[in-house]
Length: 78
Image 1 (cartoon, rainbow, N blue to C red):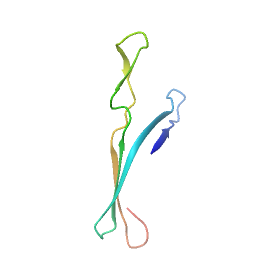
Image 2 (tube, rainbow, N blue to C red):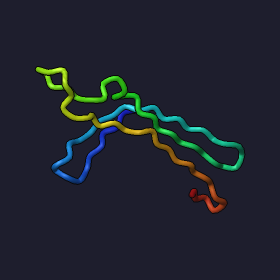
Image 3 (cartoon, rainbow, N blue to C red):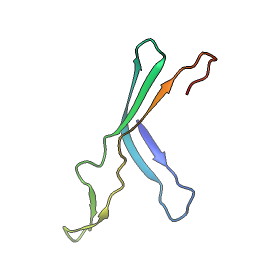
Image 4 (cartoon, rainbow, N blue to C red):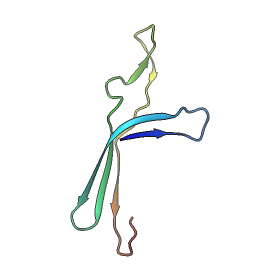
């Protein structure tokens, strides 16, 4: 998947990333697990100067994240 993150500040640039999403239903209890895992930025973790081999600053890297969703009887989820 592809996502573009925008922050409500003119000082922070828009950030783009690619990630894999895994969804799985756990049993018949109505529990779902959703995990996002970033796939970009692992090989070059720093941005380098064009004229030098030293790094200027670390790149933006998204960390793996996830959520557990449980259905409740009234049609909602928690």
